[in-house]
Image (tube, rainbow, N blue to C red):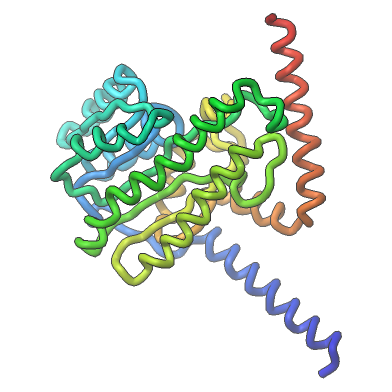
Length: 302
């Protein structure tokens, strides 16, 4: 077999493997009964968007819920909503700000002591106010501090806190919410992209470590979902509501990596085929337009 024929054969095998992995994630043939994983589910960033939807859906499936977020009033509102529709479910709230120092984890540990936590949803996160060059971000030092504490530290600390008991019981599920922005460079959202890249690689590495030890770890990398974080207010084919997204994602918890939603799988697969320089140019063009509109709007209000 000549060099060209050998190269062609390897290329075909590579493409076939990529397509097989794509369709496996898209169809997700494995379904799990999450009620059997444990009595309690802990959800961070649980008063809005994806986190709130996870808390409500897991409660519907019979799990007791620990809600962790910054605002006490919002936590109580979500807790009341859950208990009004699921009277047998217990709900516990913990109000902490994930941009603060690591002392908040002592508070969390004390509040959850003794609970059989079978599911951890590390969802809390923050992004830029609008796309911007890293050196031009307002209050840049504060953004760096807050985003690393919120997007990175929260995932590492809470996983370190809860994983040992899961391994001891040989059952558990950890879903770390990353983003498609963490799978490749995203100019004008550099720090956000980097922080979500940490979540993705940390989660996939941990999934391999825990694969034979009874605990599932998932890197969940959604595209756009209707939420305050994304700024999208109306759902569409490629921007589902948080409720639509979570119901889909919960059917894919057996996968160590997924975007969680069929349309996002298509988007991610298509973008992964682009050379990085083309992807960067397209992103700069799109987010550059969003940045220009945001700056124009700010200038009118000043």
